Every structure is written in structure tokens, then in C-alpha cells.
Amino acid sequence: MQILEERIKKDGVVKEGGILKVDSFLNHQMDVDFFGELAKEFWRLYGACGVTKILTIEASGIGIACITAQLFHVPVIFAKKNKTKNIAGEVYKTKVESFTHGTVYDVVASKEFLRAEDRVLIIDDFLANGNALLGLLDLVRQAGAQLIGAGIVVEKAFQPGGNLVRGQGVRVEALARIRSMDEKNGLTFAP
Ligand code: 5GP
Image 1 (cartoon, rainbow, N blue to C red):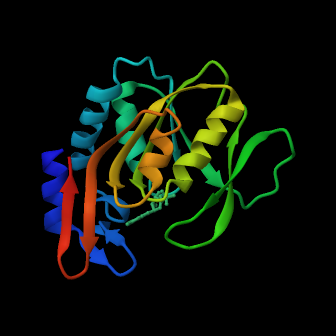
Image 2 (tube, rainbow, N blue to C red):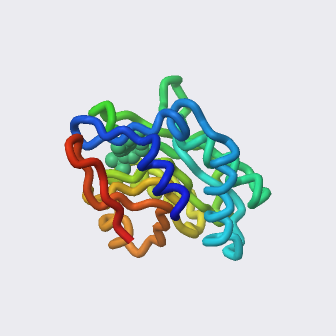
Image 3 (cartoon, rainbow, N blue to C red):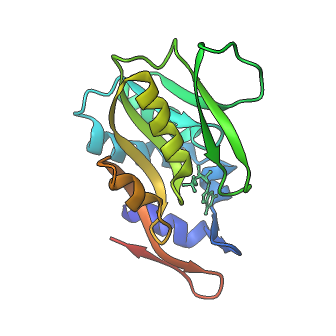
């Protein structure tokens, strides 16, 4: 998506360790009007698929998921990083390894809100090694819901997540795909 690539070139900062900082519009300060443009693209891609729920993971997926949901007119569920004690049976639970923090944590989604009859679109800000997305897919499978696909704002295509998840037969649409990235030379985009 042209406007996203231009925005990343203008405002993105490539950090050590293969991290792209886009805190000025996506991950910290959020440009909500710009999110509206991204949401329109997710709607173009998935609007005809009969989506009934949008699923994301806290925290940085929530903003773009909510703006997208305004076009789909469906609720957003965000998988919660499990800090509280939940009575077994109330929640679907899976483990996710954090790319940015290097830790493993549980994420949960209530059985009340993620249901077998749902047609689920996953929305997230980044796809890197794929752990967050694989965790969300696991929650959808546990629920017996139908997965429509995933909409990702930025895929770091030089990391294995995209191939891994597409290899499982999942439709993954990324609005910008970064082919290469380093602090010296900046970044290039893949088609
Ligand atoms: P994965 O689980 O695919 O390795 O990473 C996905 C999650 O890690 C995203 O939800 C995002 O929060 C974070 N992440 C991964 N790579 C980057 C990056 O380069 N920049 C930022 N800002 N977040 C990232």
C-alpha cells in the first residue's frame, strides 16, 4: 500500500536488532485518520467474507483493530496477556513468545466472546517471527471458529512468520512488506 510505504519511509526509524520503530503513527502515538485509510484497505480485502469478529492481541493491535471494526460493524476481541487467575474452562489459553521483549507469556480469550459460530478476521500491527499470530490462530482453533484470514499492517518479510503462517494455508494480507532493513541503509519493500 503506497501511502503506508511512504509513511514508513518518512517516519519509521530502523533500530538495532531488526526493530522498526513506528511510534509516531502506529505503536505509541496513533494517527487515527491514517488508521482509517488502512482500515479501508482491510475492508477491500476482507469486506465480502462475512466476518463476525475481529481478533487482535494487546496492546498495539487494539487501535487498528477497532478502527477496522468500524467498517465491518463487528466487535473486537483482544487476547489478554494473562495476569489474573482465571478459573479453568472459562478461557481459551495459549503461549506466545514476545519478539520485542524476548519473554514467553500466556494469552487468553473468553469462551463467552470467541465462539464456534464466529468467522474471525485477525488484525495485528506487525508480523515478524509469527508467534503472536500463531497464538491467535490457536485461540481460534480452540474455539472451533472459522478463520477468515489475517490482516497485518507491517510484515517484516525477511523474518519467517509470513511463510510459516501462509504455509498452514492461512490467508495473510500485509499492507506493507519489508524486504530488508538495517540501520545504515534503511529499508526496502517487497511487493
Ligand atoms: P512476532 O510474534 O510475529 O514475532 O511479532 C509480532 C509482534 O511483535 C507484534 O505484535 C509487535 O507488537 C511486535 N513487533 C515485532 N517486530 C516489531 C518491530 O520491528 N517493530 C515493532 N514496533 N514491533 C514489532
